[in-house]
Image (tube, rainbow, N blue to C red; front, side, top):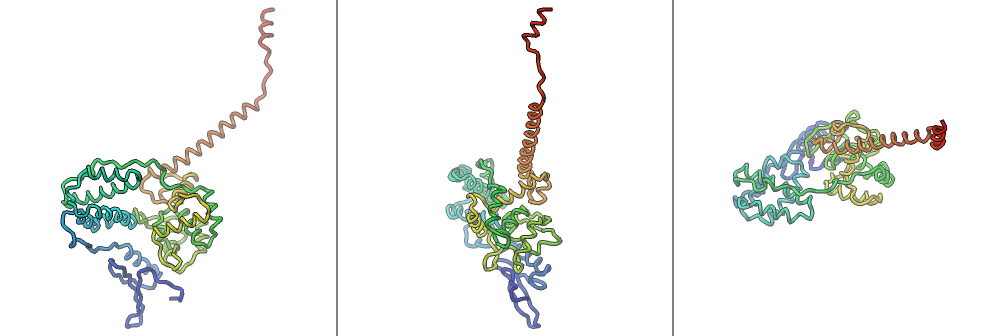
Length: 368
């Protein structure tokens, strides 16, 4: 190993009694795993990512709670297979919501929770519809867990509708926004690398943060999405390849903090907003907006819904259809206006034939 080589996070190394180097993945709450070969080799990285993706299996807190309470239900849900199968970001989001729920109602009986109570809780968050929707979605999940595990007989969330959100979601980056960002952040900077990975792969922030050189083989980027577990093989765009070639190569991932550590999604999001501000971009633009910009560009290039989904990994064709519908509308409108303009121009250029005045015609008829 060269002097500049860094070990991946949570990897410990030592030399055994035979003088051979040994490497282990060790993270609190996770199983300790021996890693084969040398750091950054294909076998090593495959074992490392497998160990890193294995969620903790420790039963936490059950012995310190009263059975039948909200506390017990939440802890049981946290240790369930359904919760463990969620993407890490989704787990974190649900933990935040349920921990606040426990603080307010932890000692109450889960069987006493009624629809009227949930209606009031959702209504209290009505000022922020997205928060109300997320809260209700999490409560629905834990109620389904409680029914399946005989903690209560019915689901009080049944029939409760999520508040409607009248918004297009994250703002999509325009070509002008992208040009302004590129003008401020040159090739070789972390900011430009981050933008290129987001724009030319169409992946979510959490997946982009995990991409490294080991994922690129023969001009193809291989990604397994955290949220959907979808496996994608995406050809590397030439502009992205040029930026990757200028990126540091001694780390597990392309994007790292100043000290070479892995980014947390929240930490990266905050830094990316700072980079947008430095470029003079308007508020509201985010990393996710570049994922939408990628889909928009693919649609405008004439890609079908399935072709776009093959890049972005969307499971719902209805989401992708919004991009193709917008692109088709703009294309049809341009074609229609061009036809309309061409028709009007032709009419204006048609020679006007001389017409005999009606009065003279009538006069001639009268004389005959």
